[in-house]
Length: 329
Picture 1 (cartoon, rainbow, N blue to C red):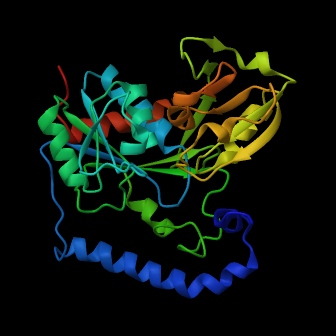
Picture 2: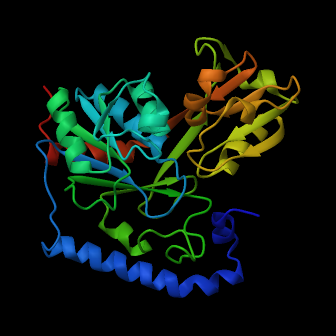
């Protein structure tokens, strides 16, 4: 049976049966948002400026690569960013948790370990974003907070909001969960400071382009191979992410012949999940690699991606930063 998100974007008629539940979900979202606006629910500001990078749909939009790009961009500008996240999938016994590149993704979440390793920034995770940001500020010397996701976590006040949209799938049926992928209605985009589209955009959307890098060995990331080395070769393509088809398409564009293996987002891999009884290379996303590196073989590879943003986006971001932060000397 296909995953529910397949039907969201295929706009299957049977989803109409779920629209009463979607209406209830949308009412709850509206009531909660307005409770924060009215002060009925407490919203707190932490000691540093907060930049939220989130989405209004369920599933992968390319948000994590953008967080990495933002961290690097801020560092180039002289800032010292710290990163917070929910730590989705982590099973730590207490929160918040500080995250290092060698942290166990089973404890703190796969995306957190990926972000800590890719950026070198101090990072903390926990379900309470205010407590997590406060702990990060206490234990590091960061001067600005990047929140990976958390757009709907209104308990944490924010200075800049960036919403990321999948340029191909966009909003699917347009319905709220569970009849569609919407966490909040599309009009929520008008309230964001920056709207980023992963793919083809229009209007005020800033286009984000993602480029795959060389293949890195899971056993030793310093060992790399150009993607063209795999051209016309049969490979096992493994993806446990929100939108696996985007990853598969990038491999097919480099001429690979794929045996596709789709796993749920944030899936907890075991060694048997990536052993297929043959000598074909196994190629996966960087997010999946942080969980599979503990039982990797010499024929296992992952593909990191890099992000390119437009000059217009950078200019607008600089303006927002200058209005909300102390510009580094």
